[in-house]
Image (cartoon, rainbow, N blue to C red):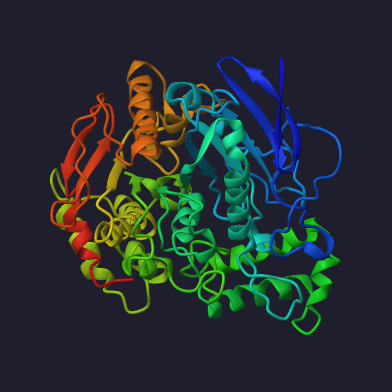
Length: 496
């Protein structure tokens, strides 16, 4: 059965599913093609006739997916579409969960099966919005020499989608005055960045940053360096940047992949990311949060226990000893960082049961460097201004033993999509997994509803304070711990 809703941009026809309604592929900005490539998102042309909102539209252009089950289907520059899943397109004014997908700012899409919202929408009586945004250099290029271009087009896409929510979500059963932005990995980094973007103010009311905190932005010097590598790979010069609008998307992606490989040889984990351009993003997001710019936004943030294991290649970890560990860390850590004392601190903290293996130490340091310490610092910064700040640690391990509780392991638990393709092999199955998924979903729903993730299925979850550092550990035995792995955290004090 189809359902039609009149939005401010025109009529959309969605589909009735079992227990919820689905509206797919709704444009929230004009296609960013031709002269609009690299430009800020522009308003939708209302056009004529009713929009068929029963199918997903194209995802943003991106390199091939590295992980099984993460296909994004058709890709196109015309990608600025969102999806709405709602219990009913009525006037109930339900909490709105606004999802920003991850993928290193170079991959992912709103159509991925992992993010299907039927379970969380039905269970929580909430409205779920999932969006596409421009990726890679299509969305994160700072090139002032190119007329009409903007820095942070991908972030501005997210803001344009939030503006669409403000205009239209009430017609689809949602409350525009209760919008929670949430995202994982690059999506979590994007959420943290939105906290510091003036144009995003007032468009959302709570934030959940999963495995991605306010540490991903590039300054203009680095953004220029990366852009120059990309231009060189394309045979384009800064005195003729308009040629970028003439090249095929496939050529731009090929150049982006070459650039990313060069960037990864250094200390940078991401080749493209939000850029502190002084205008769309005035300053460093973490510094902005520390100053209180987001004092009115309740925040939940956290990581998984073994984030970095998802990115490790087993063959490269064989024969990994202390010498190789120190050599590799000297490459990835900031110049002049006390690598040996950092490793000694991790060895001492993990010495129970014998000396830890070098490969495990590398994984732990990288997990903390890229994910956990930035999340802790974000929670510290926000808790100074906003009492409703919460921290979690997702510790459920993958059935693939070498992965542990790796990056992205929490996603099927948050969305209730453990039955999505390949998820049983990645995230596990059975009564304990199903129970943990309900605990996790209910926490995210409770936070969206009332700025407090506590619920009857969890132990009492205290707010995060720097003195106690109370953290909910989500696992087969969910529990609250005070200051988990604090010796390792202390080893990072004073380090970037």
